[in-house]
Length: 375
Ligand SMILES: NC(=O)C1=CN([C@@H]2O[C@H](COP(=O)(O)OP(=O)(O)OC[C@H]3O[C@@H](n4cnc5c(N)ncnc54)[C@H](O)[C@@H]3O)[C@@H](O)[C@H]2O)C=CC1
Ligand SMILES: O=C(O)C(=O)[C@H](O)COP(=O)(O)O
Image 1 (cartoon, helix red, strand yellow):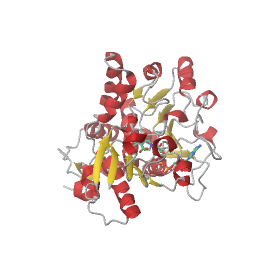
Image 2: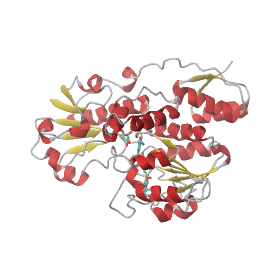
Image 3: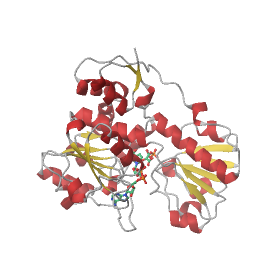
Image 4: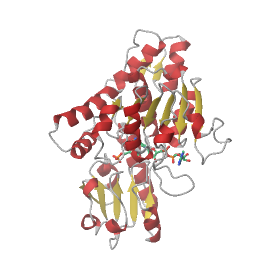
């Protein structure tokens, strides 16, 4: 069996080699010739999988090692009888940790703010539950959920009145609630004075031109963008207007990426009737330097110092701005390079922190996912 895999899928060989030959290729440039004689295609979000790519090929299974599926032409895949799968929730925790890291970096203590969550599925729902467990007031906009599923559902206008608004919707252009440009100038301008807006879903859910216009007019907002309209060709002027910027890496914890590979391996084995030969625990490495000391300070300082030790979001922001400032390569090339060379980032639960014995400190650290060790 021939398996064509995006070069940025970590450990694809460790999972798939027992089933066939794994051919690695750059996902952004995959073309019909590359996949013509493949039996299975493994992609990430940068490959448009449609008729132009697959017509006339042998491909019978497409797996995307990501949560998002907007790059798959699902209508075509269904029509062509090609099985496809994604990895729901694989990196949800990574995105939640990105949100914490961003808020710490901005000095915004979420514990005494109201938080609006737009899109409350695997990612938004994980953020919602984590915040609620810390006693945070949340309002959620998700027209596809019922109050039984989420008692804090509210109208979009109410959610936009929160101190922090975090966006976690898929990118859709059809259906009853298409998300593309759901945040246009009018909606963005409803954000309250001094609000923090984060987008960790898909870039085009916010009309980036409208956001840029608004930020020309209002200097009270703080904006964090991990995802951008027109990736990888992001707007450099918008980059300069936002407080924190990153090259679509919110979900790039190593744990989340490997979970994505392993979930697609499971789907692949189901499709081809194979027994699984490798599991996530076989390949997930131990975390280096995972014993942390308890920092000195009040609870908020302890939280932010620990988070910064395990995930320095400012380094991601700096790398993107430095790449643009250096002008050594086209922005789109640099954006993809930063993603390809992204350093290993492990999730909070891999780090062991000595318990302080003070529930006011230990409780929040546990809620964030750190592993506490009793004295
Ligand atoms: N920045 C990054 O690295 C990452 C980005 N993502 C993006 O986040 C998206 C969400 O991920 P999950 O929560 O796992 O997906 P999910 O499918 O579990 O949940 C999405 C939620 O959004 C809701 N929704 C759909 N259209 C909406 C609209 N117009 N307004 C409000 N809510 C709407 C759905 O009802 C659903 O509850 C993914 O589709 C992907 O595009 C996911 C992982 C990493
Ligand atoms: O899982 C998703 O959805 C994401 O947004 C991924 O983190 C995107 O990563 P790439 O597939 O673009 O490497």
